[in-house]
Image 1 (cartoon, rainbow, N blue to C red):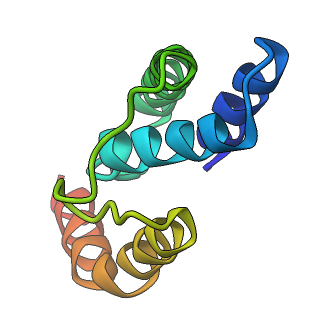
Image 2: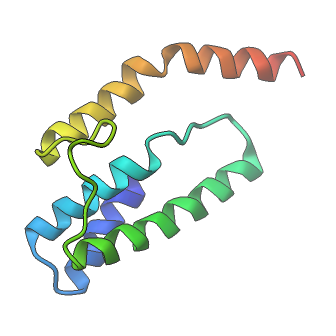
Length: 108
């Protein structure tokens, strides 16, 4: 989420439009949706690095008016709906995944 916000900030600093900021959000939703927190301490820093890299990439694509289309994954033509889809996936869809990760960690 923070990387998505930073991507919008990068678009703004590059002189981009509001519409291009929505492209950056759609690019980020389409790109980092599958990243999960697995409680790994060093892995967290790697995930932050991936988020920063994706943030810059999404902003640069957005400045060139390139964004993931609504036919891809959970991305929709409306940026608000894309954000809602991501939130629903994180809050409801990850319940079983969280249980599985905890189970795997406890078995180590």
